[in-house]
Length: 589
Image 1: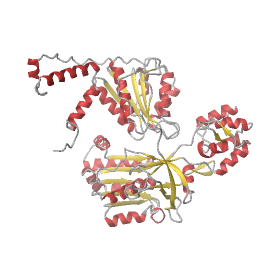
Image 2 (image 1 turned 30 degrees about the vertical axis):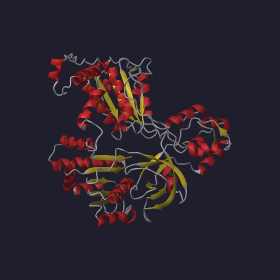
Image 3 (image 1 turned 135 degrees about the vertical axis):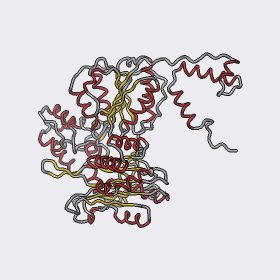
């Protein structure tokens, strides 16, 4: 009879064994090894230890030693929920070792408690241009501006980030360095984690727990850690795979008369691999006109090769590598020091900065090149399906516009992509999002995606249609006007007609005297929506983080309270449970 599973243990027993081994000391493992060897050498069943004791006495296991450290605090700052997940896992492991672990979000943490803490472990992600998440901003600003000494504190920082971004794990680095400056002692070194963070995080947790068991001794010089027997993190390859794509189609989905420009872009890319829920990362090139203006203003030789991570011409750096369109305040401060001028903290383009506070000559501008930061990749949700669009990847890109000093400006990457003609080639990488995956084919899904949030759900629907998924699909979509802004209208109507879409609920906010959004449609369909949730449906939200995703949270809580007969606190617990079960998932930006 062929073996169906190479494991001799059933999955629950295997997990229990793995957990026991991970949380046991060396001495405990030696004792268990001898105990099991004694059982087997006497041919006795493991379930009958009494017989073993009679035939060959085995020393009773020593009582588990109380951990040297009894109490720790774990704080987290998160946007997507990953830091919270890891902080909760860490607390669970600590409690199994007899350590009282308090877990708290940084936006709820009482800053007055910080000088009283003895052991503090921070799990924090990095957002945008190297910034902390919104929930961690208060804590981040406090430790940088308050100056309170933290001489009794022992700490560790687990930083989450994405190596595709130039300021990888910057918020975590800043917190780690600042706590050290305030007199706190690193118990373990800073651990930086990429998007596939679990192995590194587990190894860091194991290292921390070992330190706590042995008395919480700080790292020998405040910056390094002792060698530990924690499981080694999987070694990563040298960066994400970069694909070369060719534009097949680039069309505006908005009709004439719309105030918006939202493009559907189809890209051919040989061997591209992705799953529904993933995004692509694009590093845009800077506009030619801006580069010419900078060269003219500074008198620099555009063809001159300058030292960088690799030798490049000034033109190549300005065109493809350096952020020159929207400089963060930290770069402006460095520029002010370099040109020795008093410049207020502000975000500004390099061209405007050079016009208002010019460099003295071309040589000084070459120094400016050294303080500029790399262009940050921009992520776009994939709107195609690998099952339906082999060898292609589709994205949905809205033109990003904003005002600066009464002048309308365009976002660098959206403008770059929208102006890209067919047959143009460019590079991109696939950004995996394992926290935003389709469920099994027979599960129902509820998709809430106004605006370009429709992108991920177009991918979902194409995929479910192509693989013959039997679960029901309900789409909530919203935009400004039905006539001009109904993105992917023909496809959505076809999915309704063929039964791929069980329900579609539309909200066009400007087609009536009062504004109507997707949350209003959710409330109108509240009873049916709650019934789907209770029947096991998975809920997905994609689009703007604020205010849309926050409003969706509040609306779901209202529905759960009303139709579930729950108190506000019970509704929050219910929604939290959906998140823990992986049934309430967000991809918001």
